[in-house]
Length: 556
Image (cartoon, rainbow, N blue to C red):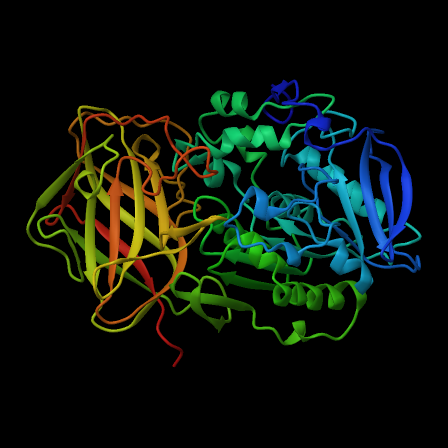
C-alpha cells in the first residue's frame, strides 16, 4: 500500500509501437497545405520525464489558441474509420489526413487559426516513463502539457481541450485541477466512473471491451498499467477505482458537453454525470441519438464546436452566448427525432411515474397490482423470448420519456446464492414490432436504455442515490439465501424517446446480455457470470415491483 491506498500493477507492453505504425522519435519540421507540422517534440513533465507530441499550427506562426486531444491511441494515427468500423457513419470526406483518432482534425482547425496538439502520454508509444490510465498521475501530466502549451511563443495563452471517449474522460480529470491556461473544454462522450460505467456494469464484470483496451492502449517501449490484473485484484469500489473516477465539484472552466442516448454501456451515463457535477458557471449540454464518432465530425457539429472555442479562446462574438443551456434530441426511431431546448439537466418538470409489473399478465400497470404472481426464466439461456421476463405498457396518449429510469424488482435465485440481471427498455410500434435505435458506434438495432445488476452488489450508496437514480455502493458482497426473495433497485441509464398513442414500452429482464453480436465485433459482453438455475420475479401485493419512468410534459 502507498499513500494513495493501493499499488499499481504493471506489465510489459502488448506490442511494440511499430506494429501499429509508430516510429522512434525523430524531430522534423515540415509545411504541408499551409500547416506547419512539428513531429516528435519532447515536452518535459514536472519530474523530468519527457513525452512526445506533434504540433500542427498555422504556417504564418502568428499566436493562436491550442486545442489538445489527450489519448493513448497514438499521435500519428490517422484512422480510416470506414475500414475498421464500416457501419460507424464516419465518411472519409469528413476528415483530412491530419486527424488523429477521436481527436480534433487539424485539417479543419489550423486553417481557422488554431494549433492542434496530439500527445503520446507518459509510457505510451515512445514517450518516457510508465503508463497509467485515467489516473491522478496522468492528470498531472496533462496539466503540465496545458501549461507548456499556454506559454509557447506560437500560443495566445488560452488552451482548449476536445476529443471523444478517452479524450473526454481525460478532460474530466485535468479540468478538476484548473490549470491556469485552460480556458475551455469540450467533453464529447466519455465515461467518468471507470468501475460503474465500463469495467463492472452493476457489479458484473465486463469481459470483452475492457480486456480489448490493453491492446489499443498498451503500445510502449517501457511498462504499462496491467488493467486485467488490476480488475481481478479490485472486485469492489475501493481506493483504486476511486482514483479512476472523476471529481467534478472543483471544475470551473467553460464547458460544451455533448452526450448521446445511444452509448448505453459506455459513455451515456458518465457524460451526463459530468455535466451535472461540474461547477462551471458557463456550461452547455447537447444530447443526441446518433453514433458518437460520426456526430463529432459532422460539419454542422464541428461548426458548433468552433462557435464555442472562437468565443472562449479567441474572444470573438459568436452565437454561443445565446445557446440554450440544454439541447436534447427526443428520438422516435433510428436516426429520427427532434431537438428540444431545456434549462437544466435533469429536466426539473419531470414527473417520475411508477408502472407496476404484473407477472400474471406480463404487463405494466399504472396502479399497484393487488394480486401476487410470479414468473421465471432460465438464468443462463441464450434463446429467444421464452428465456426472459418481459412486461409491456401501451400508451393511450403521446408521451416523452426523457431522463433516468429505475427498475425495482422483488426477485429470488433458485439454485444459487446470487444473480446477474440484465435489463433493457424497448419501444414497440403500434403493430407490436420493436423499434430500433442507434447503439454504440456501429450498431443499428439498439435499445431505448439498458441496466444491469449483480444482486450481491445491491447495497446502495445512500448519499449518492436519488428517487430516480439508485447508485450502488459496491463495497461488499451480500449473498442471497437460495430461494429468498430480495428487493433490488436497478439503475437504468438515461434516455430520451417519444411514444405515440398505441405504441408500447417494454421492459425486458433476463440472465444474459440482451443485445448480443458475433465475435470479434467490438461490443459489451458479460460472460463471467454467477448465474445458475432459475430467476424468479415476484409482483403484486407485498411485492411492489415497478418501473419508474421519467415523463416530461410539454412546457406550460
